[in-house]
Length: 464
Image (cartoon, rainbow, N blue to C red):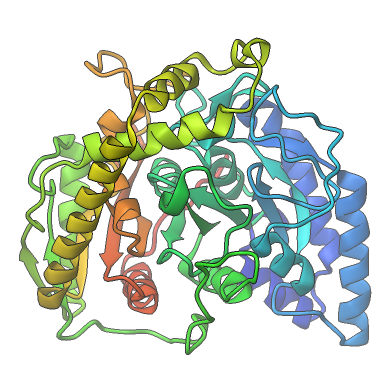
């Protein structure tokens, strides 16, 4: 019999409807999986089994009465520990936050899931204040990759990705300011999308400004569609949030992609890519041709915007810690301290210059999407490397931005960008394909990912 912890959200809901499984059994299964595997993976920083089981029992009673709250009633979900969750501390991987709270408010996406009857399993690990592309912090230590526990799951939503991959909850909420859902999705063989900025409301406003997005993290495209439908839509606390999409993401059915104009850029014109990664991504691009798309190799035509991104990101980090006393700053992740010091030295003119270049990057991509509906790239130029390091061994740069050239540009432009598994290295490590659409073309990106998933089903992580 299949372990309920290995079922997708769609499969769980089908089993609930058929009375073959209850939300209590699903919750017990994921808690057992956490007990077994999380001591090694360190994906969770907070667990509350009593509250989880109480929520599952309430859901089971609603299913018995035929009075479910929403489309995710009874489905286990984890929350990244930067998103406010009523009744649970949000410590952001830092020793500088008082666990006593009070913790009286949900972030908009968390509130939507609670309203839907989702069962909260716990909060997942993040680097301190979500500042880097790997997941370790002074509060909870190092989070590890299920495929190889000597390696990082990426970050900053590394705990969420590890939890989803290992069957410790089929759904997760993550955040992405420079690749933070896409990096770990690529490293753990899971699916995610960073939607158009504002598609999922965000509160409190991020100190990193309009770079920061919220995104679903799942094992399948269909599960991500369910999660998107639950959490998209305006929230009065987020002045930049968008209204709900005109049509739901679920129920779109298969698509052959005939006539879709697709650009494939193996390096964006400036990135260096590991040959094994490049081969898997090129094969994935060929699958889009087989699905009927008109695929051409083409780069958007911009230079690496890393210097401008770092101005925006490092200044945001300085804002995060501006209120801390010297004794608290001394306890920060050393790398975070370094970028905060650098960010505090930027002038307003330097920040606005980086913002102007960001807007020019947006113009370039807007014109590019006049010619192409989608852009395909690697999600990451490398596979997962040693856990506990900010950069791969031998890197000439000390910063995580040096090995994430495909992700942060699309935070700057606010476009939807998904990552889906497309192969493995010789060492058995997952490789990710990034699918980028024009702003507000979230539905097209999801439809393309759905078509690829159906044509090229990916192998999920299994411990056995």
